[in-house]
Length: 69
Image 1 (cartoon, rainbow, N blue to C red):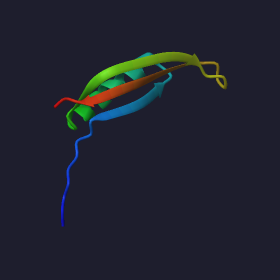
Image 2: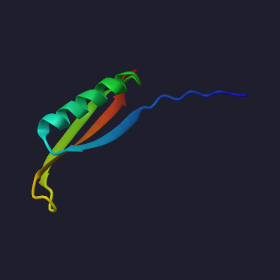
Image 3: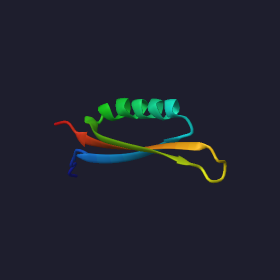
Image 4: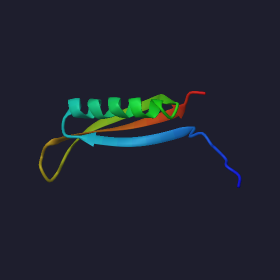
């Protein structure tokens, strides 16, 4: 039996929340989790939209993680 290990080199995750503080907390938590996989933040993109069903602000972010080898 042969075991092959491969590193995750790139990982992109998407997040959304109804409050900016909640979104920041989610992202910070995910950064800490991805450190265990030896991934660091390469790029963050975010935007704000209005949820058409509720009329409330909806904050979203895309975080690109890369292997820090």
